[in-house]
Image 1: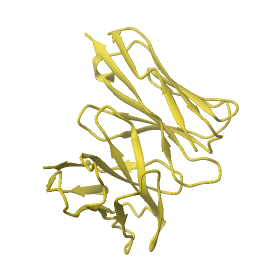
Image 2: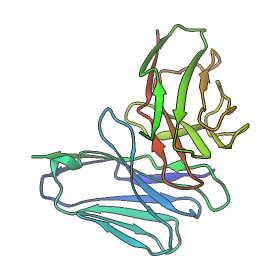
Image 3: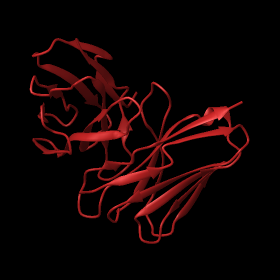
Length: 111
Length: 111
């Protein structure tokens, strides 16, 4: 069945260091979305990528969608304590409408 | 204000009881979703609905039931057949394959 995996599961960084999480799907996705969930909160949408090879930036965050539309990455430059949380990727397969969420990467930033 | 609401925030259930979790949205979204999140884990899809009076099973539908009689509402019933229901339940809505808006969630505990 459909699987969306993320690595690493956990990442502890010193404030100012960079951070990257990788997302891999077992099947082609029609689009990829990224969400952030703060501790005790609910997921909040960050961005959606649709095109093969697409790259989008939001301030210190850079998102990429792979050429085969089966993988994606989120890179944070110079992390801050406000970046703490769990980052999830999610996407619908090409021929279905339901979403599959990745397993998530929990980021901890030490001040 | 437009948004998605869930109630109650906390719910305690005795073993053998059915309980219903409420989810309402005024975003005029066609699609609605129910997810389960266990501590430190990702989101697993329980049920989803693309249109009124229609819904589909997700990956972990056993022991749960839903209805979609109105566009705005998508209640989830956790039945006594669900053997391990203690979890954080999240409801979301979206336009077709678009950004998902999440409610604040309901924490269900079985006593």
